[in-house]
Image: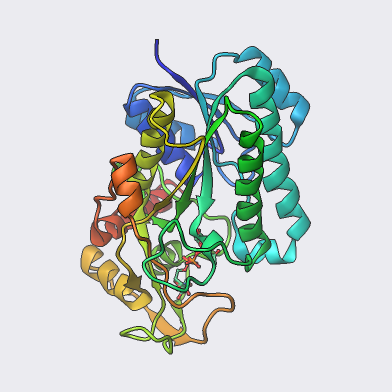
Amino acid sequence: MNKLILVTGGTGYIGSHTVVELMNEGFDVIIIDNLSNSDKSVLDGIAEITGRRPYFEQFDICDNERLNNFLKVYKKLDGIIHFAAYKAVGESVGKPLMYYQNNLISLMNLLNGMIEYNVHNIVFSSSCTVYGEPDELPVTEKAPIKIANSPYGNTKQISEEIIKDTISVNPKLKAIALRYFNPIGAHPSAQIGELPLGIPDNLVPFITQTAIGIRNELKVFGDDYNTPDGTAIRDYINVVDLAKAHVVSVKRMLDDNCKSNFEFFNLGTGKGFSVLEVVNAFEKATGEKLKYKIVNRREGDAEAVYADTKFANKELGWKAKIGLEETLLSAWNWEKNIQNKK
Ligand code: UD1
């Protein structure tokens, strides 16, 4: 019988790509999503790619009664991948309680449910934001956790603590926290991708929306960093590569290969690119010319962040494979596809 995985936030950006990779590997998937930042049409994209439609329930896992009713029915879950959370750094500064309430209560409800209904495995969607402005590059899993620079970042730190403390007194539970660097790109079929609400905060959706004419020009935040071209450096990881790491993590737990009940891994490529390098790679990959101008630094941005991937590569037997240009081309094909559909 196929193993059954619950994916919370499974119609979201990283969630939907992970659902595809799980289904490609023969897992059965149930998605719970409240559609607060995604669209039901994502299910059509998933079905188009995989030839199967995942089971879907629309509700908010902050609703504990509803979640418990669900878990009562689906007693045989082999694991959970928990994506459902708010993720906009800037918004979290203005609406901290909304972020703490949503991101923490949903996790605590899930953990309580796991204990009550004997679900033993959870993969948690974390972020390199837990390292703040790192002292040393590349960033290893041993880098210290810094004081969070946003309520969003704080919810990721606190969530990891909640998981760790819960597991220490519930030895049947296992968790893997995956700390993402900068996920970008879309599925190569262009059937699923990122669907930002309103004006995108993140670099790549802003680039594709500028190239297609929705935005006037890209603002490059700062060219006075201590980097070769003066613009900030990040580790951009293809979302399909990232999704595959979730499948590997689930299998690691199911096969009992974890070295401890709570593990965490950095998910990146290990290579940093500056904002201008990303702009150039986009132009090269797509043949489009991008209008941009240099403006002041964005408050709270780190100068350079990229992952040391050795630990994840060795332990998970996983490696990011898809290059920057191919990834940017996939983001561009997705942008064109969504504009065609409108
Ligand atoms: C942010 C979050 C991170 C999250 C990631 C993906 C923090 C501090 N950062 O990372 O947790 O995983 O988003 O959702 O918590 N840039 C421009 N112009 C733009 C947009 C961005 O120049 O219009 C630059 C930024 O200054 C930065 C780089 O592009 O140097 C990447 O920015 P962005 O995509 O927003 O990601 P991060 O801020 O690195």
